[in-house]
Amino acid sequence: MITKLSSTEIIHFLIILLIILIPARLLGELCRRYKLPAIIGEIFAGIIVGPTLLGAFSPGLFNAIFISAPKASGAFDGIANIGIILLMFIAGFEVDLKQIRQNGKQAIAISLSGILFPFAIGFVTVWFLFKDHFANGFNNQLVTSLFFGTALSITALSVITKILLDLDILKTRIGNIVLTAAMVDDFLGWILFSIIIQMMIAGKEQVSFWSVITVVLFAVFMLTGGRWIIHRLLAYAGKSGKMSNVFTVAVCLCFVGAAVTEALGVRAVFGAFLVGVAISDSEYFTETHKQVLHQFTINVLAPLFFASVGLRLNFISNFNLEIVVLILVIAFLAKLIGARIGSSLSGMTRNESIAVAFGMNARGSQEIVLGLIALQAKIISGPVFEGLVVMTVVTMVISGPIMKYYFLKEQKLQLAPI
Image 1 (tube, helix red, strand yellow):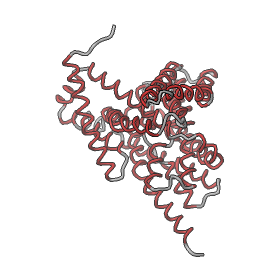
Image 2: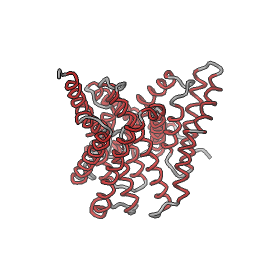
Image 3: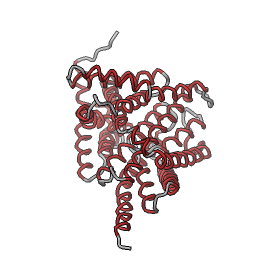
Image 4: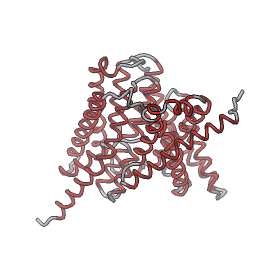
């Protein structure tokens, strides 16, 4: 039987939406005005209305808004989850399979070194410091170490795309290589995390061979036979000439993919991401379709999700400076060194390789999504999650300007008379 919200609970739910959406949009736009990712402002909005500020200075008001009506809060959580599923669906659009094939060798070299080095450093660090800093209710040293290595190795594809657009180098050789490497990073990172989720569900340190095969086979199917089926369905929907038909089929396919991966024991966001990749080059799902979905998701649903992340943070009771600094240092050094090695080996100059390394160092929504899933699964603790959020924000802020500096420096050297 479906439990309905009462009139009072519906009003409470709408009030929660307004209290979160308005400051999230305002602070997000303020960040955009100063050339910063809107995610930063949206998370900060959640921190303001969450336990860190509102809960600390006016606990009665905070409890009245967010605690006193669990059904209304649950409805908000459902909307936020739909937001992150659609956000990862959109992230899949940015993966260009043709571009990956064209820039294969250099991009894969950068991507693999940019994944393997941070993964190894993150894994080893957590493994040896587990009892002192990272042990939590889940209490599985191997799974926590694997998660942390994965979280440090992923590059934020959406953030990198925005940086390259802002610098007007998206269509250059370096821009194409960086973007392609980030695509490979993203894809491999999600497969790794999906396997970790399987290990967590199994509740043991060894995941079965078939669990790994299931994740990999589903990903391969979605990029081959599944992609062909999706394109045929979109073509059929597009026969009527109505934009709404194609749009509806695409969103339904997103939810089907999300439901399938959730049923397989992998998080729904992975399925949504794969469907987005499969749809990305469909001639029937045009840029107009993508923009309609993008505008609604980025301006309404995504701010609600990232503000909900801020709501989960409590820098007063959970903040651990030692963990934050440790995560920042490891994340920076591991990714920069790994990406720098890969770009140098692929034949880039010193300035180009440093620019690429800082570009690959940018983190974003994917890390926050992974961290939130791990927090909910008790793989990591609250202080560790807050450290990941701080690391994400810091890398988002500084990666673009430093990448721009070294890219322009290389351009000046190439234009200088011999």
